[in-house]
Structures are given as C-alpha cells and as structure tokens.
Image 1 (tube, rainbow, N blue to C red):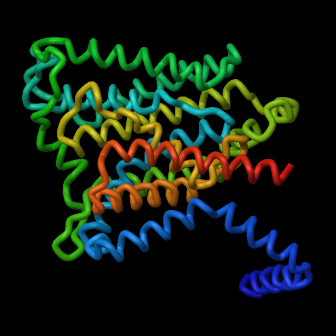
Image 2: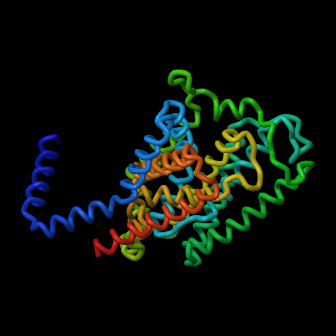
Image 3: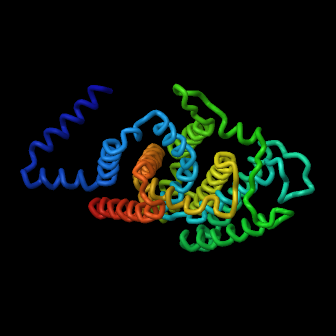
Length: 356
C-alpha cells in the first residue's frame, strides 16, 4: 500500500515537472483558489493565536471540541439534503421544537403539562422527539419527491409551520410562552455529565454521542445501498431512476434521516443550554450549511464526505471561538457567517465549472 502511494506521488511530481511555467502557475493558482477557505481560516487562527495566546489553551481547545460536537448532528443531517442538490432551512426550527418538547417533559416544574407529576423515562422522550423530527422530514421529503417542489420552498414552508407550533406549544398549561428551565438532573447528567477529564478540564458526554453519530452516518453514507442511492440521485436523478433506484423513496428517506438528526440536536441542546424557548435553534441551519460547504459537500449534487462535514464544523467553531476571543461584536458574526457561505459557495461553483 505504501509503495502504491509513493508511486502515485512520484507520478504526480513528474507530471507537474513536465508542465510549462505558465501551466505550473495556473495549477498552483487553482490549488490555492480551491482551498481558499481552508487557507483563510488557518491564517485567521494563526493571527488570533498570536494576538491572544490563551486561544490555544487547553480549556479553549476542549470548548471548541464541545461546540463542534453540539453542532455536528444537524450538519450531518443537512449534508444529505445538500448531496441531493437541495437544502433544508427548517432544520433550526426542528431543533427548537424538539428541544422544547424535551425540556417540557424532562423537568421538575411541569408548566406546559401541569397535570403531570413525574417525568417519563428519558429514552421515551428521545424516541418521541425522533418521531417528531422524522415526521417533519417526511413532509419535506414527500413534498420534494412527489410534488416536485424545490427543497428551499418546501422547507421554508415547514420552517414557518414548525415555528408556529413552537409558539403554540409554549403557550400550553401555565407556561404562557416563557422559557422552559428547571430540567431534571438525570437529563442534564446524561448529556452534560463528565465523560473524562483532561487535566482539570471536563469533556462532556455529548462529545461521545457526536462521535457515535458520526460513525453511524459514515456507515450509512459509504457502506449501505441507501447511501449509494443517495449519491446516485444527487449526481443524476434521471440516470438513477433508469438504473432502478427508487428516487422518491430515497429522497424521502434522506429528509427523514435529516429530521431525526435535527431532533437529536434539539434533545442534546435542551440539556446543554439548560433551557429552551422559541428562539432555540434559531439560524442553526446557517452554521450547518456553511460547515457542509466548507467541508466539500457540493450544491451541484452527488459530492460529499462525512469527514469533510466534521472538518467543516470544526473549522467553523474554531473561527467563531477565535472571534469571541478577539471580542468581535456579536452582530458582526452574522456578517462573517454570510460571507463564509457566499465565498464557500462561489469556490464550490468554480470547481464545478472547471470540471465541466
């Protein structure tokens, strides 16, 4: 295996050496442009580390890893939708709804359901929110597959519908739209309890859950017929249909799986933040989409890797944590997020046009 890798490297080196100086400059320019987002982020990290040395401290590194683990499930879900040349802008609201359901049931003060006296088993609540997330995903996928509607329009509609449901849900009982808090110790311990310690810094348990979900999604994408069908539909829907792929079922399953990943994000977020309200999950889909595009999941369809999504989420959390260390205005973060998405999509489209 090592010999084969060495031969490939040598072949590429010889091919590069055979190019003219003009072609070499063009090749180097293409390489720099195609990896521009990585280069920009690496340079930003170097700059932040010089300005604020504590940025590379142990507590900061663990914090970045924890934030990455918290945002990874939603990105893993939305990545599949992008592979299908679509998107899902309802993701953040589904996170909010499932977080509110989890917080309203796994609490010591039952304001939404005042008739309740004790919390149901945690596993039951997790299954409930998975069903809710999967149901929203089914509506999205069915509308895209059967009615041939654009995913943006469909998920814009479900985003508004889910937000309305959240507002009505929080009005139930004696809660009157207030933030849900006072969560049960078992729920919080399950999510935010200490997995292990590095020195005096604790790594929370949800980091382990994120690792497990990443492995599961990698297997689904790379080792199952469903994963192969997903990439086939994303690459060329007509060709996939001719090849015997059930296109409608594949699209519905991708959106349902995405919805369940959003539900897991909401379940974890309720305990991680120790509360839930109507704004929980707001704009989460923006971070997830940005992370996927940075990680190489292409909007042209049929292109993407789980490892790329993980790297994308990690890089995004590194840059956001670094900006916080520099005390950048929180409002400026929205501008930076928008620019990251715009630049990443522009680079992605350039790669596509070059391949054509």
